[in-house]
Length: 495
Ligand code: NDP
Image 1: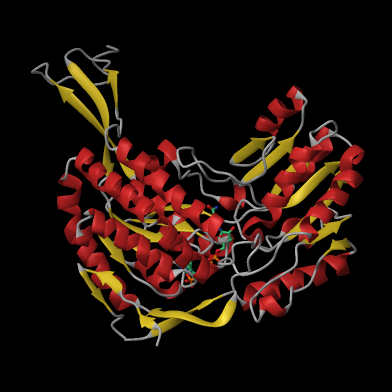
Image 2 (image 1 turned 90 degrees about the vertical axis):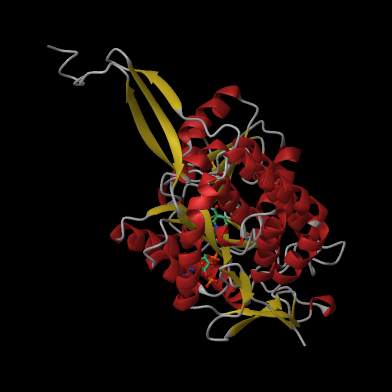
């Protein structure tokens, strides 16, 4: 019998009030029923929100460095449990264990970073325009933060939100994706075991309805969301109506440019990892390769050779390099986009089908797929497929490369391979993206650096690094007048 898991609400582990559950299955082998997780509803969210509100005053009054000590312990516990969590994560969402260990490591790095930030949380002091008056800004936590996340980084992405939110003195309601509830639960358990007060972290499992109830709940002050641009837009509209703060991390269609004279060995390794790592299911996946005509044929030929050699299989197998897609819908969607690409006139240069074989059973495996001769107006050039599909474009100048790179509604990551210093420095300015890598693929975020995108990828916020604290704190401006008299700004200084 599979285990039946619970929510963590108001300090206790409990089933959804309805008693309903959702099955969690292994995408590499659908017979493998991992467990049953609460299919929660608005009533569960209501209880969690009230409890998070009640816990807020104590948690925000706890000195920030003491909050940091708990987060440091959480980092230690994550390090102790890294392999255990990674294997659970691989089983429920598919990517190979070396990748899920990297996912947990990102949370460890974020925990230590957030802990260290509790000894800074800087405000500013600035001179007053009046005598005997002191001006400063200080940070205050926002309140109850609703955290809604996707399944492709089931621990790393929640950690980018939850750890800085807690460090800053907020309380949190966490809704993991229904595709990765077990990893979400293990992450929550680490935090609670490290000493986060029970009311400060609520775990409410379930489908999109839970996220929606959080968005609508009056006691939830802020929504921090990672997922598709479509869901993000809905959440932003709901939050706008309710004057609720919202931070959005959404989809991507990330370009890698390879210019003439670039190191092709480096570019080759980068594009194979960027396009087919995590089976292309990364927000920062390299989904467009923009290749200078002088290197196009050689590079594409070599990518095809490398990609067809990738070992596809269950992520729990040691030699697997590319795991399954997350579910049947993802398999259908990727298949559909291959048909669309062919109908649009692109050349299917590699793959294009579900991968099958004795070892692959009924898992959602798909071949590494490459389209060449792609035009910018094609749907495979514009839409996020979220599978192992690379669209290749051929260009003849730096200007054309940048025009093409920017010709998308998304703006998360971007990359340029070049040994030309002018092109590298111009690309840093010219590419419309939150992140630009020079001589690296579009993936590889570090926990202490800002992360996020422009255009339909984001809404102006950056997670990661110091900028995450701008999301999870409010600035309070403070004036202290010790002149003993009424001083009128603007008027007393300009009589
Ligand atoms: P979805 O938008 O489908 O779901 C994201 C989360 O939102 C899930 O927890 C989902 O619940 C929940 N949700 C669904 N509907 C609503 C709603 N109406 N109100 C509130 N919450 C809701 O995205 P996926 O999970 O499929 O993730 C893939 C997407 O995430 C891709 O577009 C990818 O690019 C993006 N992503 C972006 C990242 C970034 O940092 N920019 C990082 C990682 C992924 P449930 O699914 O459980 O029903």
